[in-house]
Image (cartoon, rainbow, N blue to C red):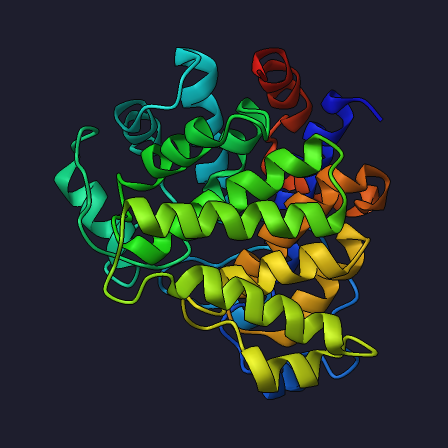
Length: 322
């Protein structure tokens, strides 16, 4: 596998995780089973048709195979990097103002940014995972040896919408994990790199409870590693992904204890909670580590529904990696 193969695997893992996970986003684990008695096993229904639970949704009738703002804003960060050959929050902000998904008062971080309509804006609050889910292009752009650039780049990609310490640490950990995965690091090394990036980010840009995020990364990883079998119900009971200290830590934990993007995506989707974010982050890292484990049937559905042309983006990013 070349670095270019791993970069494309990362982007495919992000997009397929996002679309598969969207089917159960914000459902409790019990409600996942009510909607999908046999569990999520991929796309449930005809590609392009409205997901049944989103029929009549006033904000957006999400379709089977459709990606969310997670992928849309990942591509925005990629475009900013490709255009400027650098990671600058003004460039990221400029590209994100072109995005349209999930721009409503229910998603405060995005709503405030788009209401301001200012690409130079620097957020001073919001600790959600919105920065972590779009930061993979930073990890693609910089090799894992360039720790300072990874940390600074992750913050630059975050602060248009997310200025909280936990959000920036989550972005730093995710970018570092993606970069290490492309550099063919072992799962243990990817975990160590992510924890180090989170701890260093919290040291540089501290919050009230630093190093809370780095500690959560360790705790969730160790819990998952201790389980003889990874089961959705057990994971949902212990670390349900509905807050900053469980969403990205669960995604990074799955990415470093599992060896298949497809299996991690399905597990995240069947847990529930912020399933599209967990599946997207885990799918991206595992797609970089094990590109052949990305489900290409799912990807064909995603490309047909969304027309992202991820191979072209992957080629352009691969040429810039340094």
